[in-house]
Length: 141
Length: 140
Image (cartoon, rainbow over all chains, first blue to last red; front, side, top):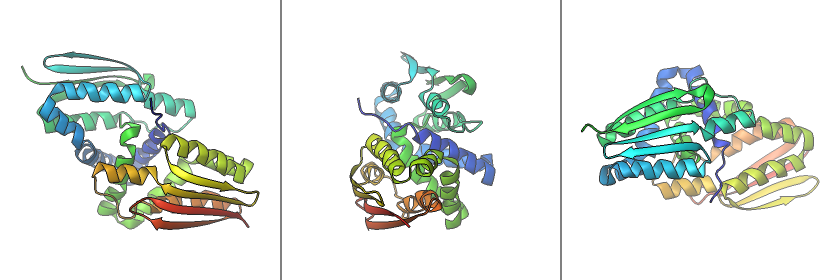
């Protein structure tokens, strides 16, 4: 399995902090929407052609590559990703990098845009201190 | 979570976003901020070990990033000849719009730290499109 450079999460955390300190939370939101629209084009396209399976494949690959502890549950109309130990937060804590106070906000915004662009709904229950979240994508029955 | 596999795309997007919304100076201020707040590991290695610390830092990062490079280390000089920058390669393969001054971050981020400890820092961009560049650090 290829190795990923997990320090990148530290640079992103720092970037979120910079945006909020200098331009406010609205700037961070605007930036994350841009990231979702421009950097997740392939995933959005795959969901639009292959359905929820594309989401499951993507997140299974990512959390495996990043060595996160996770479980993905699916049914015909939904994908639920339970992140039991977020690899990004675990690495930041282990390496001693400063962690932006709302680091998990990225997931909330990016998932909402991915859902919007694919006709799905999304929700997230998050606990940043515990590096834990439940992300859900679903479509109306 | 923005995965490490998407980081370069998001980083590139941030540079474009900052310049479009707040001007070129905002991008430079961000690079200085990152140098100050994020590169404490490089700062410590250079402060404690000098050129050996640079070797340690870049061997670790460039190996993890899968760079194609040559490194030359002597007691008074440190050189990286980047034959294919992994970030530029990622951007080229992705099809996203590359921030025109993307490569400049390497000339600012690390320079601040290296020069602080009494070294000269020369950066030569040989081919920005292909991600070929050369960094030469010398003891003053």
